[in-house]
Image 1 (tube, helix red, strand yellow):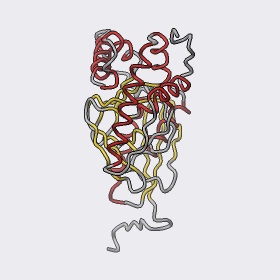
Image 2: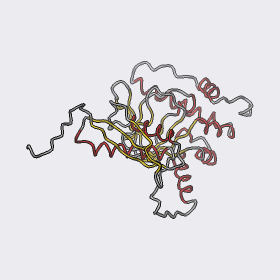
Image 3: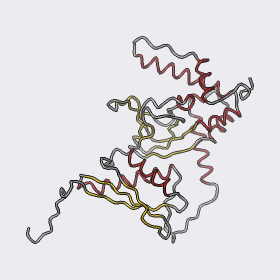
Image 4: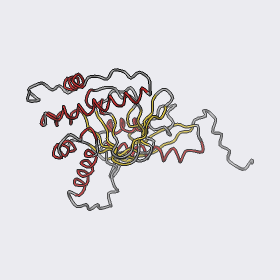
Length: 290
């Protein structure tokens, strides 16, 4: 033993530093990149955050700006697994926010123009057509609504929305699966598959998120924001009542199910709910042709 090097991992502190370098496009602002990485690490259950991770800009490389991610852990044998989780979380976060990880400059990429746009449009259209609260809309209306939606890819284990946080969008599950849990205790109350959706009350009224939603498999989600929905209803005045009534009925049904035999709470009258939606979307009578 006297001839071997002995490493004491518990001194001077029990923590071990893990560093991971990531290259990003010169088109991405450094602060935007740092915020995206920090948020991705904070929301991933498998990445230690007892000590706040650091994100440092360390080099202007030949084809990328290099950022160094520094994370501390006491799991000495799990460093490779933690590196994997860091890189995976960053990849998915960058993809959702359109932050490019550049290809090596010696690689030439050839792609037919328009192929990606057509596939994206078809994905959005198919997802919106499967949503029950949009059934009363015409095919043309649903196609127009889908044009304002955005696809986002979430990794297995990633948090999509957090209970209690402000919300201004709804999500449709295009592929994969998400699990819905309630605090305290992270109690599982639902699993949502392709065609299911969540967050419609946040979209229409700005209500805070009522549950945590986390991807339980790699999942493609379609997000429809308040701003996109408002632009749609301004051009399609009848849609706000059609969608609002469908959401009001769905909310009443969910309240009935939650009651589980007890006295169900009085559901909000549909007209009151519609008035609340119009106020939140800042829709005046002249906007709706009334």
